[in-house]
Image (tube, rainbow, N blue to C red):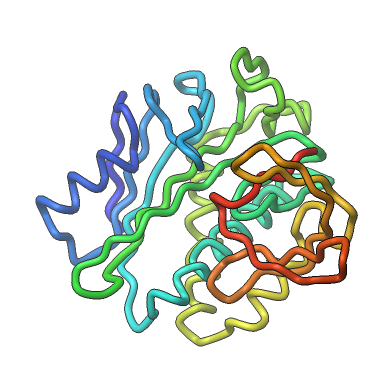
Length: 242
């Protein structure tokens, strides 16, 4: 893996997309920035990160022999990799908020944004990760937390980055070996609010009650509704209120 470190950029995902489009690299590339000025999350959300205190990086990962309809397994693998590293660092009450936010308790500690690179077929993915490490005050994200806030300790960013890279490739190897069912089961076991009655909101602002049961192989959330009907939702079709 080639690692590119920047002092500042708008978004590591945007930078990496331009970088790989120009160079068309044969190897994986990681772009890490000290300051990310316009970090993006799911649904176009802003990602708050004080310069030098958190990990904001993106990985260009070539995908071989993985069909487009199985691309969500990359999301599962990345989420599980971050989850296990945080467990290793001593964090508790961790969960995965579908599709790919990591929570400590009810507070967000990590956001993941995955974008597909399609050239005739699924060629690669760009995986953007924002992990709150040493930041202890959040002015624009009141539900955010960090490793430092959860553990009372400060950490070396490069050491955590190395742990994440190692763990990520462990899970990538499982995808390559076809360990899909076990990955899906592990991901579902860690889902926030799974098997609990929860309140959701649709794009029109209508609220309804349902129970998260599982995810489909393509990444849709399977929710049991009040009439016992099971329905699959994609990211734009509902918001979990908690």
